[in-house]
Image (cartoon, rainbow, N blue to C red; front, side, top):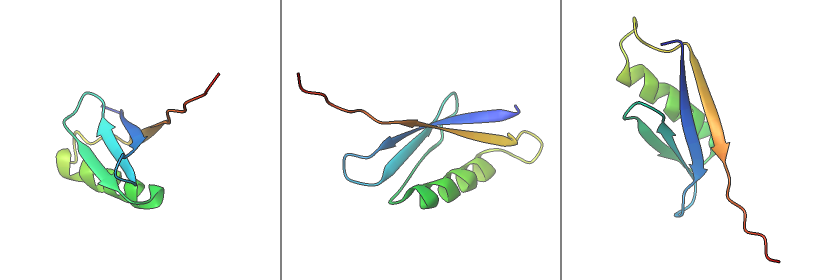
Length: 68
């Protein structure tokens, strides 16, 4: 595996949540910079060196409500 993708959303309680696509990895943090470090750490913990993806892609999702 060369790349792993995380879906990043704002948490209803505040901060951010990140879920890996295709892997059982989840983490959360108060700020985006803290979330990036936690995602890196979660990937290091989940994969051994030989299987670890070299690229982590964060897909930011933001829902917005528009009134007509």
